[in-house]
Image (cartoon, rainbow, N blue to C red; front, side, top):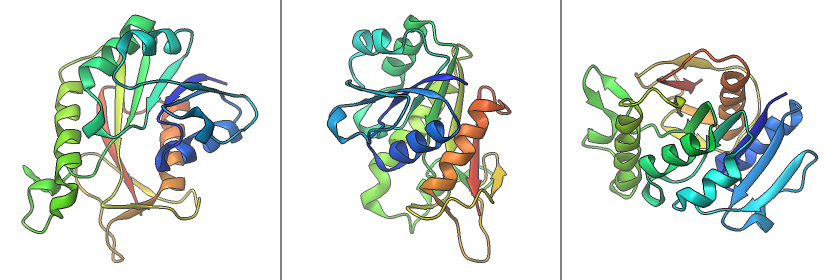
Length: 203
């Protein structure tokens, strides 16, 4: 059992991560701007927190085995979050990433393709910058998990593929449910296989 601080616990990915963590027996400090939106579950302590307040976050993170952040990249900063994890003395930092920084061919990112939806470009670009920052550090040990192109509510099947930096595509396209993404992330928490790396999950 791990003691996990989950930042962004009320969001789409965060809520599924919270449920998956609890179902596997982990203790969770669930952090959100509006903690009343966090589902009331056993072994969960819901608290208010701001992704841009490094000092306050460091206090919330202290005593945990890992921090998982599931907050939008356009509303957060990699250096701020990493400094909070470091100051708290937490050894592992796992990040809900984006698909935009994945590659469709060597050196060709999803976000740079001509058909990439313009409304998603700011978040995707910010996610790529966040990943670049992580690639320049080794402490805390980090992992950045990118979903597939379509990242939506669905079923928890437990059946999916893992990849590294290339977008995973099947005959049905490129997709992963929030629920199965959470399975892959908690698998990584429990059995670390991608230290200081990005990896991806898809069907």
